[in-house]
Figure: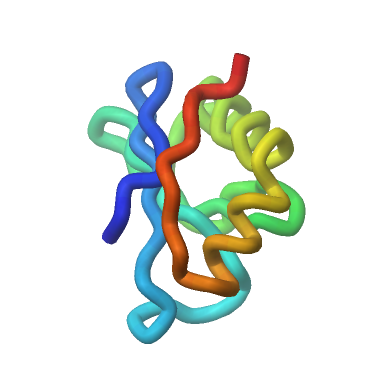
Length: 84
């Protein structure tokens, strides 16, 4: 699973499509917590990441939504810098 970004103690990953399923989403690891976040609205739909981590991941998705969706569709992954 390629690492897309690392920031504020959060690791963002995306699985290869043949191993994945819809809706388009990313996986976030925040210390001992994990979560799956929808690319369409940035909301966590599975997992246990605390509110602070959820907010950071949602901001990341909102900032990079177009690039993340393109990665999901093309499977051409890139590393994205933290949101400033």
